Image (cartoon, rainbow, N blue to C red; front, side, top):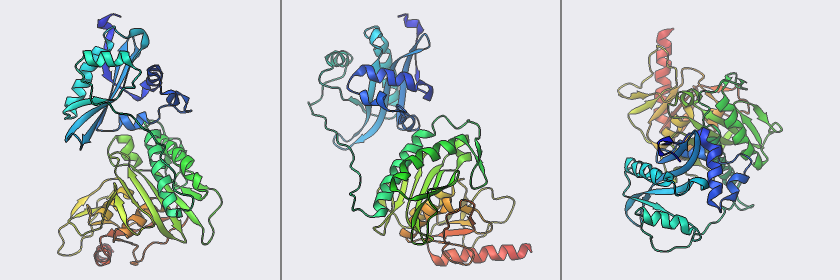
Length: 417
């Protein structure tokens, strides 16, 4: 190999097939190539701010791959760079490709602020072990590796519990499905009357493939109704596969998947994941709301979220309250921020800004966090299985604050008339 022809660079989505091939040469990872859509999780790695993918390229052919992921280690009390995958083309081992990549791995670890680079290697890979020792890696205390498939909820578990487990997997599937689709062309018109982007369609397919396991009707933003129309007393799923599509296309966070479990107009469980940051909010049958596993509660604060576009109009503000305004472009995320207390309120009361799919998942979460979501009449909106349905809403830490915003909006509207 000509050393001058070797180039080490960041990995891209276009490298996926080559990475699958190189992983196969490591041995012991046959399941990766066996998947119908192999290495979809690579997309999650590419968007993870705590991960770096490194490839070595020679004569326009990918000949090496390494993945470095930063982790906080409590047992060593330091931030480590986990070398989760490192492979070199079999025909080029010993040619200097691996050594060149080690330099890039060191650079990535420094960039991630890590103290050490740790890795795990199968006992039978003696050649790899010799390479690591030669290049300054010390062998740590011997340890056995164990693996267990994450079990599904017990069949007797509540519908809400099974829904949350399914929604969490759907979020992971969507996160992988939308990679490299930010600049793709629109594919048509959604059931809500808005343009369907390629990422919207891919996200919807990925989410529905998982959520249909529950055997419930699904009402989604893009495709509309999947399954039989829900009747009185039937639970159904409301899905916004990619809330904040414009943000996603621009590469501007947040953008999210929002999933709600609804029965007779009431949101009984909800799950929202900000796909840009990985933050996950949810509420189920235990009566509490959570963000990333920690219980949350709505609270009054000085920040107020607004929908976009605001247009050139006055912002309704209760008298004697000096709020600062924030506009994120994702209604679902903003409503969850009311639930976790980072926003004191979200005000979209002057126009029909929220669809059922924006509202269902967050509604369950806001209520479980002690907050409220009201319509113009000061009532909790009744959700219907129709992606065209829209609602004028205000979400707030408590009912009193919500009513103040409703009155303020009515005063501004009256002055305009």
